[in-house]
Length: 355
Length: 126
Image (tube, rainbow over all chains, first blue to last red; front, side, top):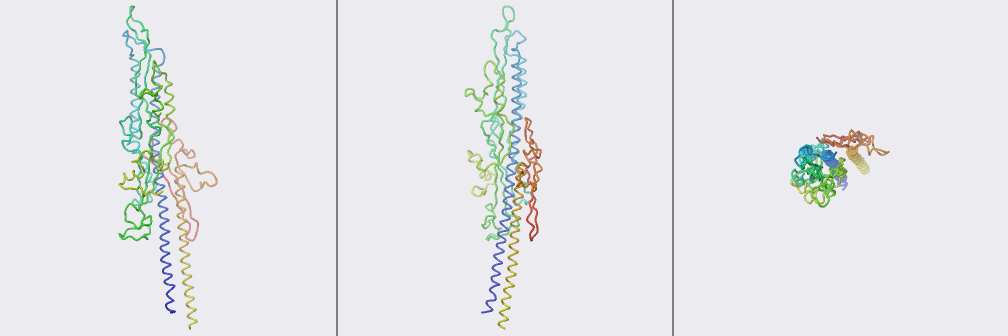
């Protein structure tokens, strides 16, 4: 009996040691999990912020170009409106005036050049794709210490290719359309009369519509960006889960099948805010003249103070901010973070996202 | 003899218990150390992340931890002279950017020594 009793403590110690090893492995794994989680979350946050920062740069640049367009249109109109009515040099009763037409033609060309710059800057490749690249670049910069087989970074946008356009032509970061500004000038033509050439008794006004600055269709263009960082456990992770397939233990307590259900996912959403590329069309429409900016049409000549209102809506003050995932465009049912990841990876993460 | 054996047996248990207690103590101390490492890592990551996003603007007051966070550059941070980096006029060029902040934290100096953790957070785009 005494001999039997002597083995009791050995068994107890063996059991205690075994449970302690399990306990140490468990605590170590929790430490690794917490550390990995904060790394992927930081990477996702900074990635989304970076993408939104790049989009803010793009939006500010668009606002700056739009401002230049507006100022050029204003300058040209003031030239046409200044001074006395135009008087054609020849006695042809022609209401058009070659010099005025030349001014309008020159202005139109310079405005068109700026509009082309606006289109190329707003194009999907130069704006959204560029922002997504910035997001992924930032994520990779922030997890350089983690092996590539652990970490994957993906940055996406609520703005799907082709969803928005400039003038319906160029796939872009948001919807923008170009308004027509009327270039007006007084004209006082000479016409043949009994004594030679006389001024036309009526002084007509010429109206030449010229496409000029851009307006937004929507008050808040949908320019969300999303960053998703994910990873699988590192090699230092202590495998304490039983896996018939012989795989490592999973992050989340269950035995791993080596698949994506064991991946850690962190998501962050950000957006540019606090600026304005241009006026929203609804604020400028007079309700009767579609596509013509209020204040920029009228007879016989509209003064250039019609430019004051749109100028007030051009604010190149976009900044980036992190947003909640719930702030993602709620009207879009197909471009949620989960479905965006699904489209990128072909994986349904809808039930796997943990915050 | 029986008394001697009994005495020896009791001593054996005491030695085993002491060894076990030592082991348990070591394990507990290592767990505490692991916890402090995790804690310091979280601190450093959060400081670096907030630092690179918000600059030194939030590092004010007695509990600012400014001694542990070094912000090289940050968007909109007037103290690092990057406030105007994005756009404050009507030129607004699209330029490459790289904002960085480094933060550190140190575990308490215990049985396993003190461990310093340094984290650099980056916001960059080409």
